Length: 52
Image (cartoon, rainbow, N blue to C red; front, side):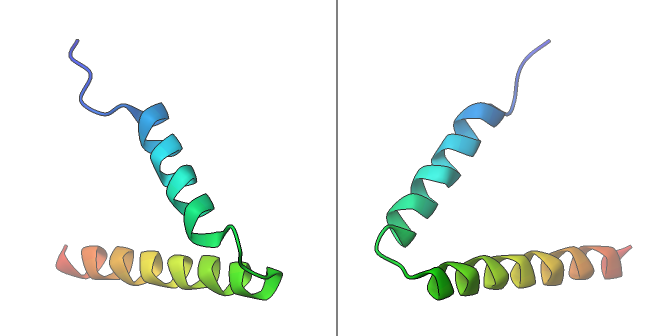
């Protein structure tokens, strides 16, 4: 079976990118960042569901 997604590497890339983006951020900035990420994901899921 051929592996098409390396989930561990993908998770590490995301984690490292978030660390770099947030390393000097305040608690409030971190919360705002993750809330915005969640909002965007919810919108994307809603768009995908609307296509069906």
